[in-house]
Image (tube, rainbow, N blue to C red; front, side):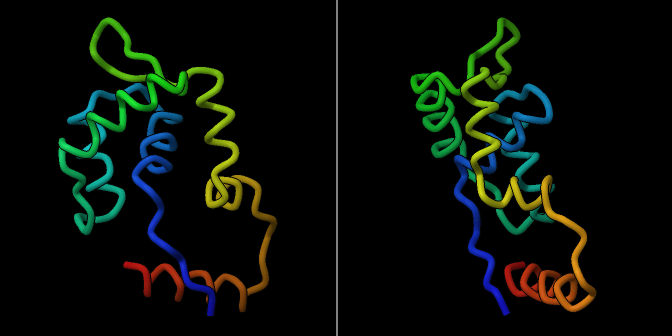
Length: 108
């Protein structure tokens, strides 16, 4: 069985911002929602990360206070290994699907 390692907050934030622009509080809630409440990042980790990503040119802050990906940020999302699997995964055999589900259950 393959083990799934908890993704970094950086990767999760970038992937969430690939869906829509959000502010820090919305990102915190979204992370909590997608992990069914198992992971709630603190404001002390999210806001410095957003400033770092902005400094790296991966996100930009809009007038309404929400952050959105730049073109460089969209390219960075495509490089996240688990994002490539989610989007580009080919149909799998039943055994592979069961193995993947067991891995996710173990992770959660």
